Amino acid sequence: MNFPLLDEIALISGEQSFLLVAKANERFPLCIENPEGEICQGVDPTDLVVVSAPGGGPVEPGIMLIELVRKHHLPLLVLPKDHPGSGRLGWVISVGPRIETNCAIRRGTHPEQQVICSHDELSGLTLTGTREGFATTPLPGGVFVKMLKSRLETEFC
Image (tube, rainbow, N blue to C red; front, side, top):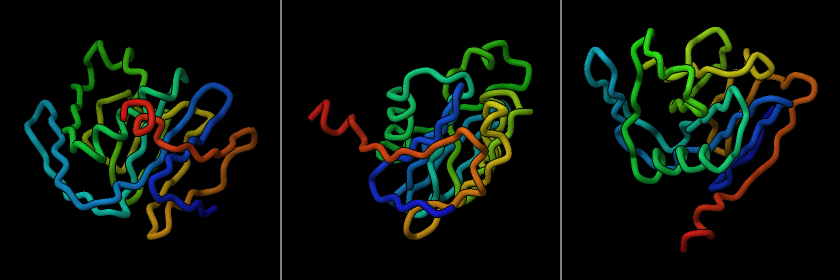
């Protein structure tokens, strides 16, 4: 399935969780801080910025995370695998050309940007950035996609 994206944000929503998908729209370095040190990777305009909310909740914090990364190039923080705060993370983020959702990993503990923690209802999806937007493997039943404008631009300007 292919979806066009410019400045929109796609909301992929199940009954209990959601993903937000946006394009990076510009080239920039992304620093990822982890217990072993710092990794810096290049981000291309067609790369995806994906936020996962495995436990659901409001969409606005996820939109804020997307904008902090794609517009302000905020570094990402990765927790150690046994960190007690991992379970309290309501939203996690990954950036890259291809991102796979996985319900078997701990939130916020993977510096590898090709994987993101998700609820099992959205697990197993592969999201790939394209020039026009993004492509995804078939969506499970009961999951829908809705295009959102970044409300932050209109609310705070």
